Amino acid sequence: MTAVEPGAETRRFGWAAIASASAVLVAYVVLVLTPFGQAYENQALVGAREESQELRAESLSGLDELTALSFALAIVAVVAIALLRRKPLLAAATAGIMVISVVAAEALQRLLARPELVEAPAYWLSNSYPSGHVCVAVAVGIGAVVVVPHTLRALVAMGAALYAMAIALAVVTAGWHRLSDVVGAAALVLAVACIALYLLALGGHIRPFRQLRRIGFTAVALVLGGATLIFAGVGLMGWLELLPIPAEPILPSPPPLELRLAFTTTLVLGAAAIGLVFLSFLWLVRPYAIDEPVEPPARG
Image (cartoon, rainbow, N blue to C red; front, side):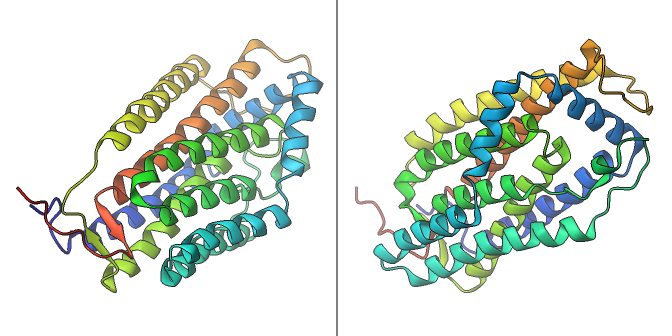
């Protein structure tokens, strides 16, 4: 019996693309274009400065390794997997997802300004939405999920989510990016990936499986979904503790307890956003064969 109604894939990926693109806009409006959002993110930036120099140095060292060369090598590796599986169309689509995501992030950084709604140092007002580093990490991870055989999708999604979370935590700890930048980057990549899969579905290259394998997906959903729920819950509790957030200038010293709480809240909410994106993408592609022949009906 067919697990998913034929033709439903175009609607599925189309609506997912619209929802993800909307999330990019909402994060920008709420966290960048409001005094409340800017005040909260300023608190988190100051809170990040209070972390140990050793931790910040480790974060900067890890980010230095995420260069244009490493991104190019990641693209080559992901595309090579698709080519080894003799799926040139899948290779082209995956390369497009990764490259277009990063180019779109760079374009949005130039287009989406950060107005001075809360007094802050000038360098805090530079455009950083969305984060290019997080975009690279999420794009490579989603690309890997797309090109591997469907039996490995859940495992690859788990590893990719952990890697992207590590990059998100590093850019926040280093003081390079804010929560809005992390959320916007993750949602942007998901939107681009869903658009690509929508186009593949229109071309008849995505079809429902006749028989689903649930064990891997269920295990990852429990682990990754549980972690995401915990992160989101902790972050929400921290956010509520910070209310009301005054839209006033924040001096770098001496920092009150609220500054560290804002920083910690940013970390856990950023990790939750990454986990939600990978969990959502895994759920979206789980019942479909991408550029693969349809499985024959199960006998008996």
